[in-house]
Length: 157
Image 1: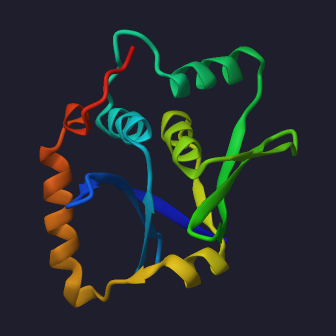
Image 2: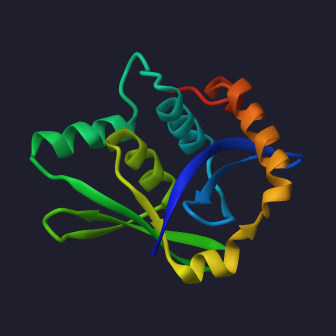
């Protein structure tokens, strides 16, 4: 397993499809995962420290975990089959629950839980960006600093 950091979310053009970009800690691979607009908003809110007027689903799930005394210890991006990514939520009790990566990432950001990707997923879908291309990644980070959750065109109710 390789630890991953969330670089951020953006909208891929021309398809207007949001993606979340993860970066391998201590490595040079990046993992782009295409996600839905609702999940993109949830991830962007968590990264920007924004609290919506009413809790989003991921906020509710975090609150429920706290209320029942369950600790989320890991999020794992475990597989990529036919273009679909798979993830697992791993709890301190040893229980593992299947999840969509976008939901798992949104929850991990709210709970401070580390995110990991398997070697297989990173080998299949990871994109190596050598140090000399780091300026392109910096441009992406600057873009992320300027985008807001409202840019994803979703209503949170």
